[in-house]
Length: 152
Image: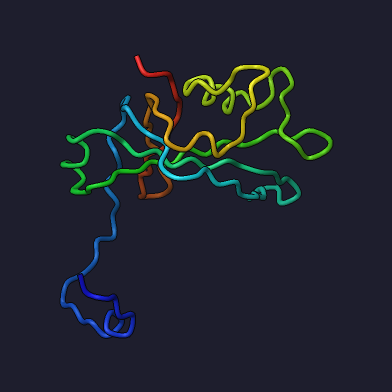
């Protein structure tokens, strides 16, 4: 295998155009694995910038040869974003009715047992059934994970 040369790559020319439309994963239920470490990001409200918080982003790799063939990709990923509720000291709120989407994710992958240690990196490599739905933004269609359930 040759060594990658960034300068040569930048000098490559093409006469082809790039696609401007993404083909989303079709809506439905799929077996998927959490691919890589989850990421936590800060967010700020678009309509109300005074609102802010943390969100957990999970990348799910869809295990479906049919979807890979349909999309023409070897690896098909769909993101799940979970807004996190924090307690007064800035930690994860585990109170009743708090962080329910996170609780459902943890339950689906067998990591929601009271008294047993949990951290977000433990999610990496876990398998579950994900429900994919579409969200539109103008003309763009995005596939997102709406729900997670244990494998049947």
